Structure formats: C-alpha cells, structure tokens
Length: 69
Image (cartoon, rainbow, N blue to C red; front, top):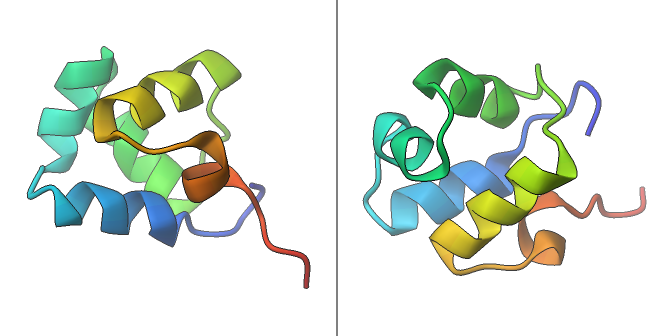
C-alpha cells in the first residue's frame, strides 16, 4: 500500500454509511488506525485486512489489491 491512499476502503465504508469510528469499533482498532489506513499512512496486518473485509462484506482484492500502473 505504501504512501497511496486507500480510496476503495473509504468508499466501501461510506457506502455502508459507517463512520471511521464505527468501523474501528467493529474490527477492534482505534478510529485513528482506520484514518491512517485510508490516508495511506499505515500498512495494516493481513489479519486486520481480513477483519475489515469481513465486516464490510468485501474481499481482500476489492479493498486492498493495488492495480498495476
């Protein structure tokens, strides 16, 4: 993920009308962690990625796979 923003995560969260706080609480992290992931400032563990995907009803590919440039 590096320094790229995770817009896909933010869009998936917003489509479900969830705040960063609500998603963070559901997966057991702080709101700041979700904000940093969305901003590209934090590279989450695979375990956290899976928890986020399960919570949002998506797949790893949909939220975290980087497209080839």
